[in-house]
Image (cartoon, rainbow, N blue to C red):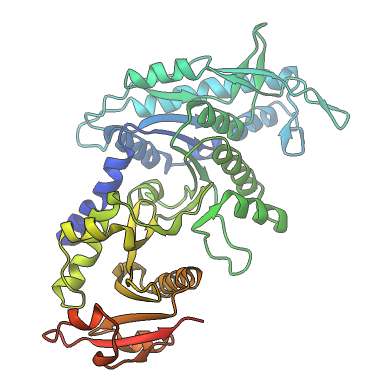
Length: 438
């Protein structure tokens, strides 16, 4: 049984994400296979929890296995070309049946409110409709795809109206033409186009397996869109479902969606772990770096204070007031990871412009094994070279050897430049080190 303190700590640590996700629009894709499995109930419960936390939720479901089942029951063979279904007239009837059945099943699950269950008191209203306008895919490579189509337009205004009315929007992978025709669509394409049209904060793709690194077969935590494109190019053996999801993530992020997540749906609670824990459990894809070193701003002061507070209490760092941080914020550099400040340092340039002091170098306890302190130091060294600074100084009480291992040399106090010498605090008895900048 989980210890109460562990739950309390997890709940407290999740609060920044609860605040960040409230009133944000998430588009979530899941396959038709997911709907058929017993674990789908847990996924429905997680959708309900997101809704209760104020997330504007759009769900896009697949129907591929449901169509295949009906075809096989009639003695027909499913026909595909380049992983796209060829939807002839008889198959289109099965598409309509499958879409209607799956939609009703999901609506029924979202309508549950049995006392004592995770859905108790949820009172979720579900809205479906003709939000997707489609056109025929046509003939490709000499193959007539018949009633298989592609997205032409998303009625984003109508979807936003439903979300504004506090409804969950449920979208099936079928589209309609102005002439009244029905087209079978790729569910991943629908989810992608919906996310782009809504300018959603997140496109979440619940995949049948994790996105693994071809080098070590470990899950990939994050990728930029360029890195994801390179992964697709150099790894043709990626599972088709993962490749389709990566392409959807790349397209969405390059067209205005904040972030895309690939999450292995077979891990119970994976959706919640990805959204409400610091490192998540899936693969995050974004146009920009997920973690970056950058100059600090006034908005970072709260995060810096939270980061350095434990080190100040331990006497490792000198206590700094908010006012002092505000006055010196232009000297600070931070490492930001998904909106969280996980590392910082200060770079105080002396009046002669030839010397500078490194101060307040700190990295969050959970991220100290990733060489982030060394990255901060390298960033400052490069900055010093660009500015023509000849020597870097640092004062330390408990991390002297860390700096020595990175090329610093002990220095006598009397050899310090002003104003470091006159400001030296003999009560702290800090060791002073320097490094010559090449």
